Image (cartoon, rainbow, N blue to C red; front, side, top):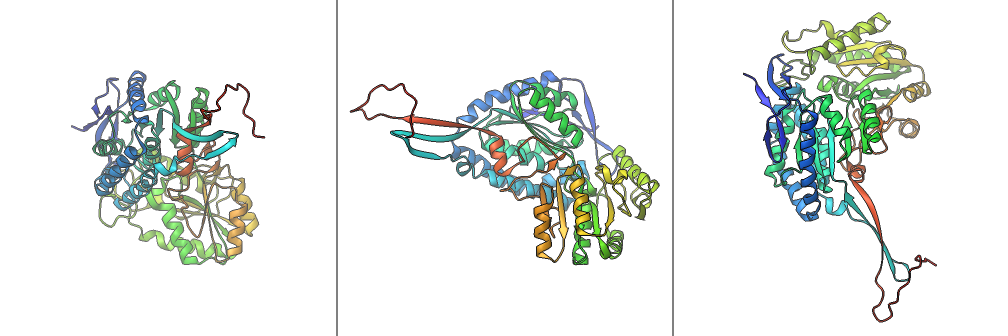
Length: 496
């Protein structure tokens, strides 16, 4: 009998009452390992109500209390990372080392949030007018929600909840129903760290649960990471119901490789960034833009490296790339390769014909050359182990190609020319840029997010912008007259 994965409400596991469940698979074997409860709208309302009670109490906690809980949570997460990584591998399929890397990047955000006493310091202007002082403070919003994707079941929730809780909010997490167990593991760590019950909740579900969070009047803000169509829906629905929304969408990340680039460095970096986690990450490189004479040697160098990648169960020693998340998604990605070949791309390495395990949702690495901008393998976010090479004659042509793309999440340039790199970072219309760095995910004390159809809303995720998103500013103007000379003055304070 498969395990049942239920909600986390008021500091404990609570079985769902909707009567609806969804299967959870081990992608490496295809076997159903659990059934996850899918919440009804009434169940979501109950979770939000309890979170609201907890938020009112947690708001009154001192900054020192919050920092102490965050430090304790950080230590627990650090010490039990290996256990959490195994859970991620069993439900997502990524290799164990990649799962550990995901947790490490989430841990950085927890460490940033431990500085909340410093992060919430406001400004103070003494004697702004005669006898008048002005200062600003930031206060929590109340109940905030996070709707997170399957590809990073630990890191993305940690991007959101650490800052939200540090700022004094109660956080309701709706993780992907495809790999829900990491969320419960994190919930248990929060409780063990001393977080009051109700401040962190987990409600599993599908669209019904998402919609319930988006329209609930007591949910003040929603954070989302996922595909662009859903991000747009989340943003439009949430803002229509008066919420703050930060919704991060899809990507088509390009690597511009100049003729002077170190070929081995570029090829190693592109292979790692394109095929790590089976390409199921929004910062994966999916297009290599080869400028001039570098194209042929670059394609050869990438093709030479791909047979060396071991595709298999992510829990097995020596595996480089695991399976895709579901059988349906595996077939969809293979269909993109079919379409690319039919539309004229050259299949240099064919993942459809790779020697991969028969069980599970595996697809080998694919390399497509001579990709053009009108092909679906270029226009669409594939979210799989498929890399397309677009050949251009000049830097300007490559830059124009990148800037014309509707996605603008991340990009990279490979070159030995500092002037070219500086020009690229100035000219490229993309939110996150790497210079000889293939996956330019910002460290926790900056903020993460793209431009164009990769972001809906005005606020990037985590870092300083995360603190701003989960708080609202209040400006106080005060005057305390000298008791010896005090008199009533109902006029507007004058600065001159």
